[in-house]
Amino acid sequence: MSQDSAATPSAKSPIAPQVIHVIKGAARANKIAIYLIYAAIAAFLIFGTLASLTAFHDNQPLYRLFFNLPYALIALTIPVTLYDAFIIYRYRLSQPSMVALAIGVSVVVTLGNLLFSDSIWLGLSCWLGVAFLFQANFKRFFKYLAATN
Image (tube, rainbow, N blue to C red; front, top):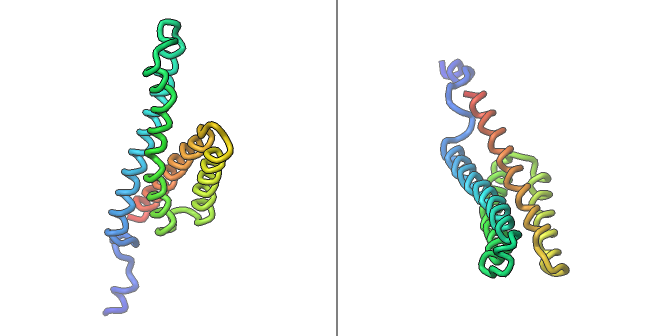
């Protein structure tokens, strides 16, 4: 009788509930990172448009908001995406080489721009793509989870 019960598939998920909870938390954190990216793009567009108007050409605080706020918002996403990378790597939601490539290229380009350039915009733009890549990984995992239940 115990062999029959072991042979029948259970209605439970093949993944432990604690693991699903951790992955859901990482997906929520990634969603926050994506909202920060959207806010950075909006700040760049709004403050850049205002700074380009002739009435605001000499407005230094507006120029600082246009120049620094998008950088700061995207920089806030870096720790979140590193946490997401750890979760994705730990639970194999993507190929480890893809996670390493996304994080590695972003780190190298960011550090290269910090050390050898006067701007960091290219390095921070790499982090934009990392958050969206991880969003796709989380969506694919939850679609798999829904299909198995």
